[in-house]
Amino acid sequence: MEQKKLGIFYGVGVGPGDPELMTLKAVRILEHCPVLAAPQTASGEMTALNIAKQAANLNGKTLLPLFFTMSRDKQKQQEAHQKAAEQVKAYLEQGQDVAMAILGDVSIFSTYCYLMELLKVEGFCCEMIPGVPSFCAVAARLNRSLTTMNEPLHILPGGGKQFEDGLQLTGTKILMKAGKNYPKLLETLEGNQLLSQAGMVENCGLEGERVFETLEEKPQSSGYFTTIVIS
Image (cartoon, helix red, strand yellow):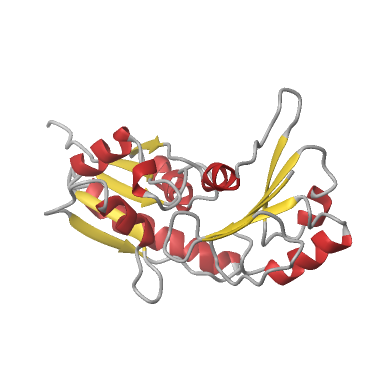
């Protein structure tokens, strides 16, 4: 008996917000796949998919909202990943390709990668389509170089516990998704005399974008998509 063909699970980076930063390949894959998955917030927002709609023709697609918990509880996170993987799996088993739209680049702090690992174990083919990382767009918005020939680049989770140690590293530091932990970050940067070296963009390429060349004035920020560059 001929084995039934399974669908391919694509992770598609749609960039940080500006639809003009989407790659031609991202557009092609999104238009090719009959099923489009994307993270959905509790309020119903599907930010990555909304960006994609501005650059690709997504009419007639089956939309698959995926819900991921914001809890730090590992078990709750794993349960959410497993449930989302099962939702995607149902379409893959029918032979339908599924594209999951992801903000920024699909390899950087991406929920797609958790699902990919679960589905690969079950024998499904998964492909990653890179996108413009948010920190690259932020650096461009700030008109800052991230590296020189011999200077390293460090990407640190702004909500993590070890960011203060990371600030002591040589080279440029990126604090990703820094909004939730921003007051603590600001305090730490001030304590390390780094406010003048730090620039910040909130909601880069999205509605409500705010740009700060330095943090010397200690601007307030509560945006989830807040990225800080220290160079």
